[in-house]
Length: 111
Image (cartoon, rainbow, N blue to C red; front, top):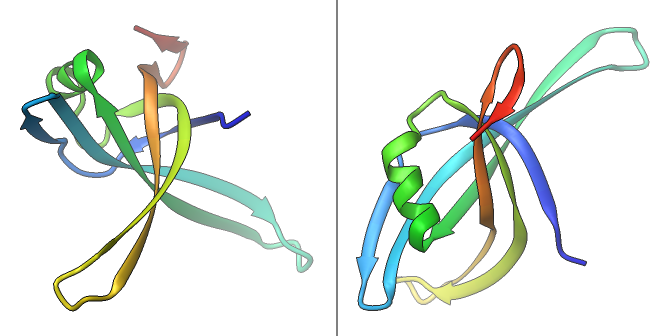
């Protein structure tokens, strides 16, 4: 089963593109992790994820999301590759979202 659930902060403004077949929204999501290493030091790390939403979900993202907002994203991992202008192969890992909800910093999530 290919399933991903992340909770993090929107990293930049939403990019929306319209195609003949519909609408697509993309944004980055920052997830944070804190742990204690062997030296008993607190270590914080941030991972960045590329999120893609299509159709009505993309339209909702365009209206509701903004940089810094905390959201929950559910979707699937997607792997793809393409040739760039320099004829180099670029590999992309992204999460194709099927559910995105705003997360309240105090009370959990709400739609």
